[in-house]
Length: 194
Image (cartoon, rainbow, N blue to C red; front, side, top):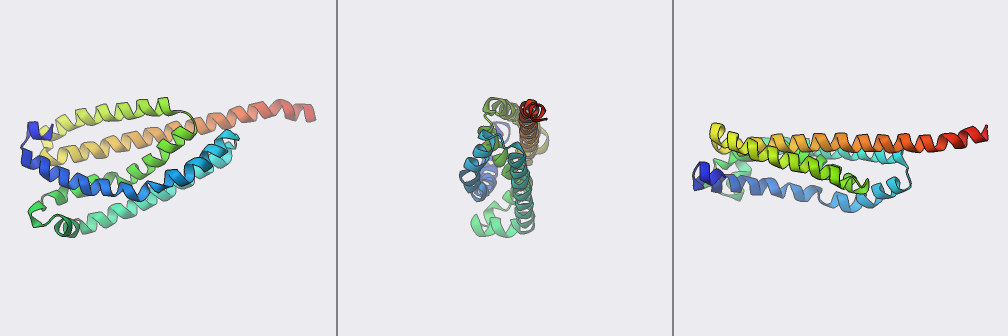
């Protein structure tokens, strides 16, 4: 879309920045392998309080780590781009800085997705992702037209933020519903004991 609405040199510049952004994802990828079995076990055994606490802690840690990564990249973007890609791609620095604003949401989004799998709410999560992708496409069209090469980067930030915030809400809502249902099931047992 960028090549169609602008030039193919802008596509090369944007793609270069996007590659550096993609590298940031490798930092967070081991977490689902470690914490998916733990979270799924908590949910299967209906230990909703611990599942919710783990979810909150993972969001806090990944969000904080994402903020640290973002700050480091914002400070060192010029140096990173010149070392990795060379001075010819200096325009990529602007793209990198904007894209890395979404890193905290990207990291928390990974946690949300594997928690959605553990809770078996993949279908609901899929609709959030579909809405995010469609929103991204629309934002790209307007972003490219009005803001040029940084438009798609801002579209990514907005879309990733929407997806992550929606998935956080979805997961917390489901964890609370599960907790409430477990408490209702336990209530007759409590009445019998009295």
